[in-house]
Image 1 (spheres, rainbow, N blue to C red):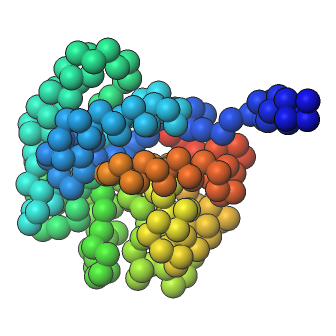
Image 2 (cartoon, helix red, strand yellow):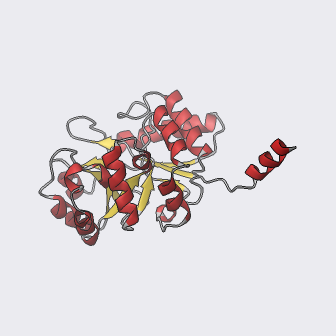
Image 3 (cartoon, rainbow, N blue to C red):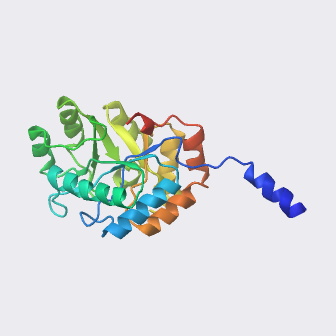
Length: 247
């Protein structure tokens, strides 16, 4: 009797998942195109897991890096077409699109100038920085993105050690017109305790605009599931104004 009571009581507790924000806007799900899913089977497993976590829409973002992942809009869109067809074949109903995660290297500015850019929702340009060296042209690039009519979005700002010294570094980036996208995994300690601390500070200071999974591998999906029980993720999903749903 007591077991039945506790079981029924547990069922009354609302389940926390990502359905409130609906859209994941940072992942690596197209098979064999970067350091994300390496084959179609892995892609399908990751997508099924994300559906289980409550996501209704996925915008997957393969890396574009001059030295490592020389993807182009054509190669990404072609990969998306193959993935979409496999989803149809398997009767998996999920809205999925593709953009890119651009590395701020010497080729990025050329891509901007040519307008050869894949965007999130037709507006946002997701870009990442070196994990080692502070880019001296960061604000120049942010201005160029805006001049081209796009909205800059910095991927996982919590993961750049050279920014972590002061919350003012992030405020300056925000004040320049750049949006900040936090990785959910950062709040689990997946990237280390120091990154987790920075992520928590960014949330505490209301500097985060978008939440992303940055999902690459199956073990990360397990951590993403764990994140749904973390206090800061629960706060982001219940008492915080994220903008994922707007894309």
